[in-house]
Structures are given as C-alpha cells and as structure tokens.
Length: 468
Image (tube, rainbow, N blue to C red; front, side):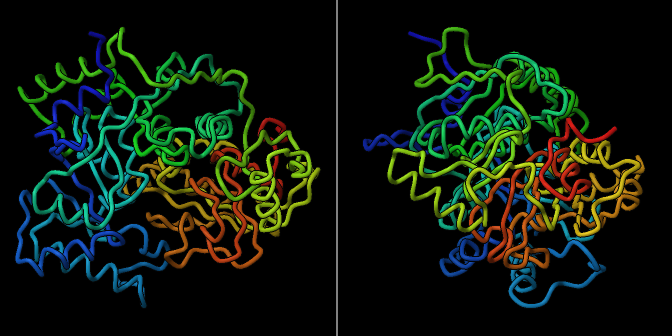
C-alpha cells in the first residue's frame, strides 16, 4: 500500500463516517465568519431554534464591506452598513467572538486567521469565502463553503464532503530579481488554466517552496481557487512552526510540544501517489500581468496583447475577443505601453507586511505619475501598525499614495473603494473578472512590486527596468 499525502492524512484524521454515495462526514475544527455569507446561516439557526455546537470554534469579523478611510467609529450607510450591523447582532446573539472594525486585531479574515494563531497546521478550517484556501499554507485543510454549509457547521461542527483527487505542483529553481510569488501563481494558472485544478486538492512542493516565506506561501495557496481548486496546501516545516509560535490562540506548554511533534509528521510520505503531477521551473518566470478577464489570461509583461485570430479553438477565440473588448485593448499592443489610472496594493492575496515592504522598496524616493491615483490598504490592523513602525506609511505617502485602514477595499466592489467605468487598475488582488473592482472597471493583476512600478511609470512596466 502506498503512502499518504498531506491531504489524505488530514482528511482521515477528521473523517467521522463514510456514506454509500462516496461522501464522508468531516469534523470541522475552525470556522471564520464574515458579513457576506453568514446572514442566511444565522437566520436558518434562528428559525429552527438551534444553538451553536461550539461557539469557541468560530471567529467573526467584517472585512468585505468595511470602509478603509474616514472610518472613525461609524458604520457605512446602505447595504454595507446593514451587513456589518447584522454580523454584530448575530455574533452577540449566538455567543461568537467578534472583532470590531477599530480593534487592533481587525483585518481580512484570511490575514487575521494566521496572525491570531486561529489557523494551525493539521486543522480543518472553513469560511464562507472562496479564498479560504489561503490557510492551506500552514498545512491546514481549508476551503470555502456556502451559506447553507455555514449553518451546518454552526449547528453540528461537521460537513459532508466528497474527497478530492490529489495534485502535486512541484516548483523547481530559484526566483530571479524582480520576480515574486505572485508571478509564480499567475504563470501556473496561465499554464494549466482556471480549470486546471478542478476536482483536485493541490499540494505545492519542491525546492522553491522551502525558500518562500509564510507570507509568500499564503499568496500561493490563496490563488489556488483561481486555478479551479478549492484546496491549496503546503506541508508545515520549521518556518511554519516559527510563525505560529507565540500567537495568541496557538497552543502553549505541553500542548505546544505535542502539537509540533504532530505537525512535523504531516508531510506527504515519500511513496505517496498523486493523481496528477505538474512541474514549473520558477527560474524561467518573468514578471507577469493579466491582460484579460480571467487570471488565466496572463502573460509576461515583456509580451504583447494576443491576437484572437491566431487562436484555432473557436470557444477560446470567442472568449479572447470578449476579454479584449471589455479591457479596451488592441491585439499586438505591447503590455508595457498600456496606461493605467489607478493602483491598488492590498487584499487577502497581497496585503501582508512582506507585500508592503516589496512595494515600498520600489517607490522609495520616487513619485507616482500625476494621472495615477494609488491606494495602499494593509490586510490587517496589525500589518498597518507594523508598517507604520517601519516607516512604510511615510514612504507611500511621500510617493503620493493614500494610506488606508484594513479591509478588502478595492479587491471587490462591495465598499466605497471601486473603479469607475473604463478606469484601468494595476491591482495586487486575485480576480480580474468583469466588474470585479467596479462596474466597467478594468483590472490587471500583478505583484505588489509590479503595481508599485506601474504607479511610478503611469503604465504597465517591467519592474526590473525601472530606473535606479
């Protein structure tokens, strides 16, 4: 019998029972709760008169709808304010720990989970948000769920799930200058497509993984969903253990010692078998930017906008034509000639301290182009405080950026930060779908360093060529 993968080990250790239809009942250790997906779940509990099985296994925070400027102590008006108010009321009514907007622990769920030590290796963790795969960077089995599933977790602390196939993405080589983990995941999605990981739990492995920080691993796993997979994972190692140690909700004392012993044995066995293997040499990757309306439509910044007429497959050709029409781009245009209007640095993909350091290093001593409006939105209050202690806020302000409070901000048009129709944005977020950042807004995905370089140049540009 062959060995087990990381995914197998966590699945088996949380399997309560199996069913004849091939599904299994899994125990769920942790549940992150936010304002968008939870209202229907709470309403369902109230209608049935059901209480929570384990209130301490949940943490609630508003992130999608919160304002990131002029926040003070007031709620936004309209739907956003209603969503936040309902979360506050529901958390209080059901006894769930709630983190207010102006709390020093506030932030995007997928940033504060690891910061608090709520995210731990070997756990099952869910949230009503597709980018829950972020937490797989710690060797957790983490995935997004729907409102009805949120209700089930509240009531039973379990979920009925079908086991995924196993896929290993081996990253070889070392990243070159000016190339970052965001370029890795964009290059991977361009290679395998937005459906390349469908039905598979992805484990990232290889020598390049060992070199990545925990922040970078979170970026990598965060965008697994953009490759079609609900699950992205990295086996825990000494970097993982060092990151978790001392976090507010992390184990202590003898529990810590026992936990670490377990975590060190979570990695896939040498003889584990994967259903699909993909290899990528990261040393061959250049900085990437998206040109279309899916993360798959991405190219090195040194390339030109593709020509749909050269695409032999009719359906793909039609998709390319629609993407170019929405993006307002002409085939053959050098990507480095595309002018931008806005720059957004933040999100659960790239709003951590390492991301802000990388962007600040590019704009230090420079000014953003006169026609560009740039905002920097830390992923959490803790990241904001750390950045301010390092003087990064002063660097961004001096360069002409707005410095904001924590929140999802312009990653998703559910708050005050959004693009106007026709505006073009260099964005560090995870999705470039039509209308994702605002109706008619045009999104180009890239790394924080590339976004900072675009702000300075006023157009998409290769960060490696920015004047010293």
